[in-house]
Structure formats: C-alpha cells, structure tokens
Image 1 (cartoon, one colour):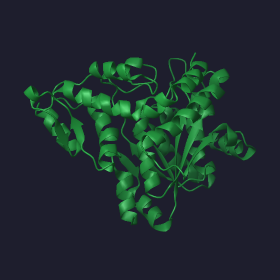
Image 2 (image 1 turned 30 degrees about the vertical axis):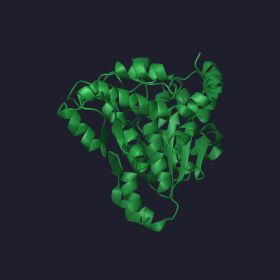
Image 3 (image 1 turned 180 degrees about the vertical axis):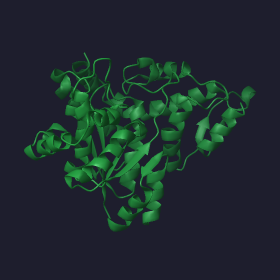
Length: 339
C-alpha cells in the first residue's frame, strides 16, 4: 500500500486525527511505525471493545507495530481495588487476543504490555514527578474529567492519571496513540506537555464512542447497556431485542452504531454483504452493500427495527464464537476478577 492508502485505512470510521498531515508524513517516513492503545483494567470487557480492536486491526494492515497497554496501575488510580488488579489483568490478557482472533486480525506485529512493568521504573517516576511540578491541579482534573470517575470527593489519584498516560507514549516508544474521543483532553494534554520534558508530541487518533443498548454510552457497570463477551446466544438475542432502536431514528441508536463501526467493516473486508432475513410477507431477505444503504432504508422505515436486531444478533453471536469455545476457562478467571 502507498502511504496515502495506509492513511485512508487508518482514517476509516475515525472521528478526529491530530494531526492528519503529521500522520501522513509519518507513513512516508517509516515503513513500520508504532501505535498503542491503553485500557485501564476496570470493568469487564464487552462488545464495545470491538470498536478499538477493529481499528487496531486496521493499523496492523497498514503496517504498524501495535501495542495494547493493559494499564493495571491506571485501573487502581480509577478505583479498582488493588487486591484484584492481577486477576483483572489476567482476564484482560486472556480475552483481548481472542477479540483479535474474532475479527480475523494477523497479530504477528501485536503485543500486550503490562503497565506496572515499566511505570514503576526510576526514570518513569522521575519524569512523572517533573511533570507534576508544572501541571496545575485544574489542568490535570480538566484533562481527566471525561475518563476518571472523580465523584463528590475526588481523590488525588485521578489527577495523576493523565500525567501517566502522557508519559506512556514516550516509554512505550510509539509514534501514535489511539483512543476513544472521550480521551481527547488527555491526548491534547500529552501533546501540549511532553515538549516541556523535551519529548516529541505524538500523533493522536480518535474514534467515536458508540451508544449502549439503552441509548446512552455503553458501560461495563450497566449490564443492560452492553453485551458481555461471555453472554450466550439466547442472552445476546434477548438483549438486542430489548435494545433502544426507535423506528427511523439514528441518534443514540446503539444497534446501528455497532453495525457501522464493527459489523459492516468486517462484512465488507470479507467481500460479503450484510444479510437481513425477513419473511416473504414482509419483503423477504435483503442484502446491503454498505452501512449507508442500511441507514437509508432504516430512516425511510423500509427496514424494521426488529429485523435489524435479529440480523445483528446473528452477527454478534458469530463474533463471540472464540469466547464460547473457551467459556469454561474464561468463566473461572472472570469469577476471580469480578467477585
């Protein structure tokens, strides 16, 4: 692929890149740049994680070295009990490679990094203390506001969170950081503050957050809003049948959002079409060749929410196949990590 073709692949379904020209220059300069995504090991991974897994798969196709930071210390800073950190790390480290398997990614250039393996080293901690001397409390809190659960009585740990995330770019030796758009303030904090320590700002890539099944942000703490990776076929079907998906409405529609961000890109990459099966009396089966076609039919009320939900349940259940093959092992780890 040319640098321009690699850029287009990375841009697919992104919301913002800071900056696109820097990313293109990077692609022209390096055959194998590197990118990382960090996830704090807090709640149980759910199908919303497929958004970033699929985007990282795009980075892999574009020739990147991909690192997933399992941020155990960040999890503790965001109120995960210290005594379960190792167990939750184990659960994440077991499930995330299966997610890449589910989307058919080639993971020879993929690695998982444990945060505490490098974040407790002398050099890192010294840089963290240096950064704390020129970062105001207001700037740190503003940067972390969309990510950290501060509550009515904020803890000091939440203010440390964005400083560490900025330094992770340096100590992971990456060219790009990728995250959801909720991370934007932290990513901009990194670009603004790393030069103060003599480090080069990185390119920041963001994808949109998708609504949950109840029309708001998908959340690990709200079981009604998301499908768990270990849900069985019937549970997936029932959750999707009960999902918010008002006829003709696109806004806050988690079913359509997951189709756009995950299911349709996977379908098109396999050079297939998205199948919606319907009884003959309702028009029979219909094949869609793009997300835009689905949305248009839905807005025009030519595609009923029930039929879309059934098709999506089938697609999600296919995605979850690797987890069902490892269900006994995963259930055991999950019970220890999420008592």
